[in-house]
Image (cartoon, rainbow, N blue to C red; front, side, top):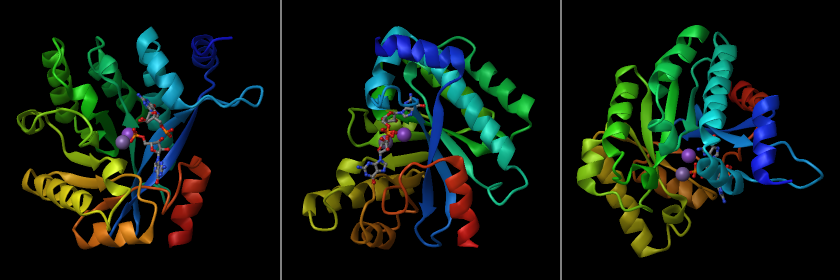
Length: 256
Ligand code: G
Ligand code: G
Ligand code: NA
Ligand code: MN
């Protein structure tokens, strides 16, 4: 029973789950949005994690169907949250380059938003730096990214600092959010090299007028350091691990 078969079955049976991890404003400590992270239901007590099945989905092309499910589910959730205490939240979904150069991707997204009556500005897409590296498909990806931005979707560059994208590329991509990879966060505030990197990345982001998000924040010391250095948005276990939509609702309601 391969992971590939398990994925096919989950796609057929609509059997995935989205968990949501809060993104918290460092100054107000209010939740401004969430990142959607996919899960496969546990079978025979053996969990299969996305770090394992996403690469298989990418290799087999199943990422296209899986990715459509994720986008539709996130839009369904945005719709369900309209006119509730969660109505202001944005949802960020992860997308892989394979989805971006699949034919009709933007059209699919536009129609899904229109059918649900959800504003494009509430949907974000996270693309890892690795997936933005130039390939022969680069032009198609850039065109798609521009189309997505034109309809009002905000794009973020994920795991920033771990890939090999150049600064000129960063400048040429229609990105509005930069997510600092967890590996830079882990050893602050004590590690001098990492704090130097963090400060430089934050200042780069400000100068390019990008919003900056810190990922994998686990301690109050990290939080204070990031807040004092003008990092606007915090994501990590310090506030919450990825949780169900009901738990997000409780978190929002209890803040009031
Ligand atoms: O929760 P964590 O174990 O969720 O996620 C592991 C990895 O899987 C991360 O790199 C994350 O970006 C990726 N991932 C999680 N959900 C999705 C998804 O819906 N689509 C894609 N392409 N990647 C995802
Ligand atoms: O690649 P991407 O950045 O999309 O994936 C984020 C991954 O990091 C997910 O697997 C998510 O569950 C995990 N994650 C989020 N916050 C923390 C954290 O504070 N600590 C650790 N160890 N992992 C985290
Ligand atoms: Na992400
Ligand atoms: Mn990341």
